[in-house]
Amino acid sequence: MANLPEMTKHRGFPSGMPGTGIQFTIRRANPKGVTPIKALPRRGRPGMAEHRIDAAFVHALWHHFGPEPFERGNLDAARLNLLFGREVMAADKDFDPLSYEARLQINEKVARQSFPEAFEDVFEA
Image (cartoon, rainbow, N blue to C red):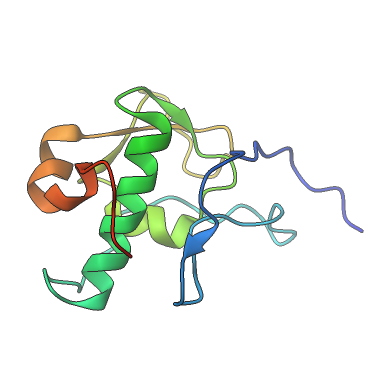
């Protein structure tokens, strides 16, 4: 097996959205290289399945990390990319989009506007 880069595994973080097959975390580092973090357009609008999945991911991020910076680690790049540059921001000036050690932070003001339901104590999946 290839020598994979170190990657923090966020213990206790939900692995995905129940009943959808959508993952929130990855099991191991990508042997082909780290998937870059970059802002991608979002298609989900309130009431749509995609919006619920993004809201569930924001809920998990908020209830796991709160307002503090957190390491990218094993968080799924595809999910992060749909929030990046809006609800989730680079936490450091020297942010490396190709590093599992890159630090991110929830932009609470934007996230609360986009996904107010994500900040409730309980999120109904």
